[in-house]
Image (cartoon, rainbow, N blue to C red; front, side, top):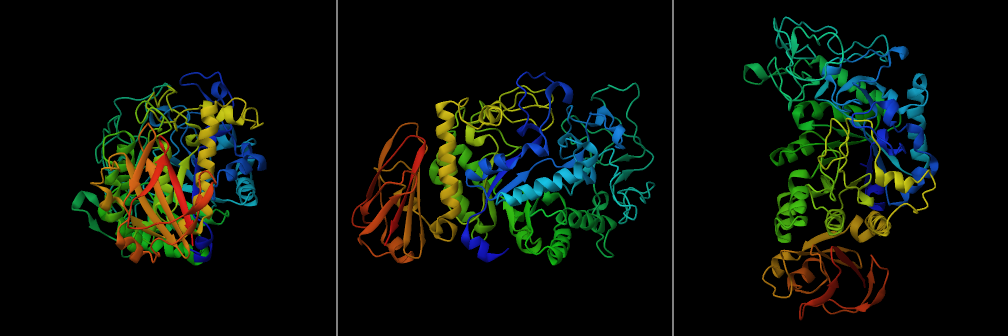
Length: 568
C-alpha cells in the first residue's frame, strides 16, 4: 500500500448493491421478476449521487454484485445462456454464483449490449468524484451452469479441458463424482425438464455428495486449486494447477478496468499458497491495488496476512461479534478490550464494520431493533485504530431490513437474491432531489451523525496515524464508570491526544474516567498541562487538562459518545 496516502486519510468504505440502489419502485411484488419490481443500474450512480456518497466521508465504494451471475431473467437475445431455475436462488439470483468471470451483470445495464462500457464509465465517474472502486472476486466457487461467452477466444473456459472421469486431477478446474448424477430434491421447477448434471460436480461449500441440501450452496460448484480433499487433503501445487493460472488472468482482466481493490469472497476456502503466489503477481502490474479477504478463522489471520499477502481481513469473529453483543446487552463493553488484544501486531490489517450483505441490519428485529445503538458501536469500530472501516448502504439511514422480499424472506437482511428496492434509500433519493423531505427527523440526524463520524476518522491525524491506549483495565472496578455499558480509550499523535468515551446505554450517563500514570508515560503526555479541547462530534471548544490526580468527568448522551481532542 502507498504509505503516503495512508498517512493522509483513513480508508472508509461504502458497500452498495447497485441492483436495488437506484430502483425507486414503491409497489413491489413478493418474488417479483425484473419487469414487476425493477432494478437499479450502473447509470444511477450519477456524478450527483456519487457526490452525496462522498459527502458521507467515503474514500472507497464497494459495488457488490457487478460480475455476471446466474439469474432467472432471460438474456438469450444477447447471446447469454439461460440458467435452469432449479439452480438459481431467487428471481435475480445470487451475485456469488458467478456465471461468467469476464462479464458484468446485464441487469445493471441500460443497453445490455454495451454493459461492459457502462461499467467502465461507472469506474471513471467514481474516480472523478474523488473515490476509489472495490469489486468482488469470488475465487472458491462458480454457478453450476458456468459458461463464459465474453472471454477472448484464446482463453480456455473453466472446465473446458477437465477429465470428468477423475474425481480429482490437479489440472481439472472442478471436482467430480464420476459415474453419478446430481440429484436435487427441492428447488424451482419452472421448466418442463429437470436440471441435469452428469457427472455431478462438488458443491461450493465443500459438499462432496450428489444430493446437496437446501442449506448447502447448491447453486454453486467448488473450484479445484490442487487440493485432493477426498484423499486426505494432499497438496498438488507443483506444477502450478491450471485453476491458478485462470484466476490470475481473471484478476488481471478486472484490474485492467481501473478498479482499485478486490473484496475476496470466502478467501479462506482457497489455499493460502494460491494467494501467496497470485497477489504479488497482480501487484507486479498494478502495485497499488488492494486485496481484502473474507476470513472467519482467527487462527488463520496471520497466515493470510503474512503468507497470503492480503492488505486487510474482515474483523467479523472478533470486533463485529463482540460489539454486536454489547449493543444488544448480551456482553459487557469491557469485552471489546479482548478484541484488540487478540490482534496484536495485525490490528492495522483488519477491516471493521457493523453491517454488510451477510449480516442483519442493526435496526432489524433480529439485531438491536433500533439504529441508535449503532452510533457508539460505529464510534468504537471507526476510531479505535488506523485500519479501514465500512458501512453498508442504508445503514446511515437506519434501514431495518424487515421486508419479506421473496427468496430471502423476512430475516433482518436486505435481499441479494431478489429484485427489490429499499424504502430508506428511496426516501433519501426522493426522485433524485436528495432534499431530505421524505426522511424522518431521526433519519436525518442519524445520517448527519454518520457523516460527521466518517469525515472525522477519515481526516483527523490523531485517528489516521495515532497510537492506541485502552483505559478499561483501570476503570473496570471504577464505581463512577459502568464497564458493562461504557467503553473508553485514548489515541495520541504528535501534539494531539484523543479521549474517546462511548455509552451503549439508552439513557444519558455522567462518568468519571480514571487515567493511570502509565498512560502519560506511554503516550508522552505532560500531566496536568493545559490544552485546547475540541469536541470533534459537536465542534465545541474550550481549555482543559488531563491528569492522573483525579478522574476526568464527562457526560455522554444516550447511545452515543464523546470524541475529545486535546491539542497541546
